[in-house]
Length: 392
Image (cartoon, rainbow, N blue to C red; front, side, top):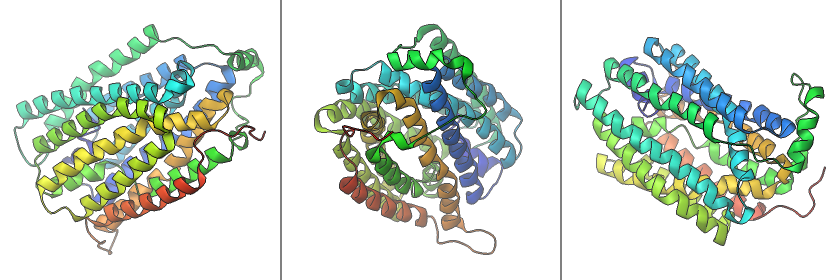
């Protein structure tokens, strides 16, 4: 409910420039990704998944009410930072819990189902968002402050309900490596963790390199929302487009994850990155609202193809006792470039200081180019499964 309209709140209500929108989203993503590395190490060290995940969801939920009093983009940046700290705490342990709970030959399906469920929640949230915005402000081109704050209040109900549901319903899956890690809990030094990524293998390393290059051009989805509005879509129109995007994402995720179990993760990711490159090239050249709508649907298919397969490939490439660390390391490496990627996108679009930038097409053309190069490197250097022996 909140995330989808946050770029419009920044641009329409607070009047910030495009580069500042990129800075807010980039800082949030980078923060989350760095925290994921430590959280993943902590999860593997102690063999616990559930309560780290519960804590992360709780932190994010507690940050959301502060949007009600935000009056500047720096306020929003601080709240997003707190929200993304929660995301960083929960994501790697949650993904490791999913991996622990699934057989390797069905891992793609499991992660695909998780993404489908997550995105189905986004669909329901957008339906509520459309209803709230329509009741509060009608079909105006720009988002109003009252509508945004009403959405914040509505969003608190599912946020806290999710925390309670996870705390009551989930269980850790104990494995021998996790049990060993738990026995050393009393001697662990949390202030100086020995996080060693070298033992994760060369295949994993190459996949990280390719993903970092891809992420450099994959600016925050906030820019797609602003592009849709720039092409003439009203707030309600943008929300309907986002809903359609999430429906496609939901419908594609589980079948694509299952297909990656049969045909391979690498091929699925290659197909997704190729679609992304074509899609972003389309956003760069879009001239009408209709073009944006069609491209958003294709963009949903890209997400559905890649979301489950990428995480399943990470789990396939590394030793099972280091899977949470791998998820955290992967997320941290990708997330570190989120801030420069999103700021660069804003500067390419609108410039900075006296420089006026190239225009709205530029960040999307850049993203298409980096995605193409990343796909080539993925095809050449990343294996389809882990190495037989992983260096210590």
